[in-house]
Length: 148
Image (cartoon, rainbow, N blue to C red; front, side):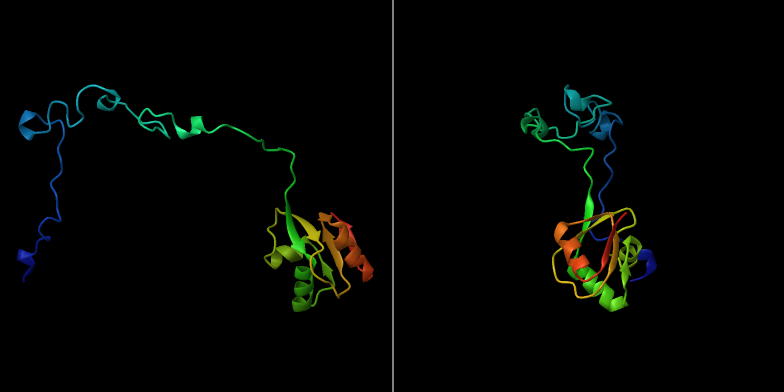
């Protein structure tokens, strides 16, 4: 085998179908588009969700519900998470920036502290919201809660 007799495997390379280049090419006339109809015309583009004339799914399925534009989304963080974070980094105060640095929230998140798990450390916690049980658990250990 030399460089001058290298060639691709048989059947791996197909010739380009040259459309609209006269009757002699075998692809002249209608240029493989058939006769008449939308798909034979220039400028045709199929609509998204088009199902060949069958009623499209987005028109069959009814609309329902609504999105409340005034809804406030909170990133939920439990007391057990605060406990493990405070133990691992020996913290006495936890705020949103501490949680962002630990990778528990992103900088644009509103943080809500929830009361799942147990807390044994006295902590100063600053967050956007607290559940009733979380607030009670923090203040039971003489910790403080501050709403931002």
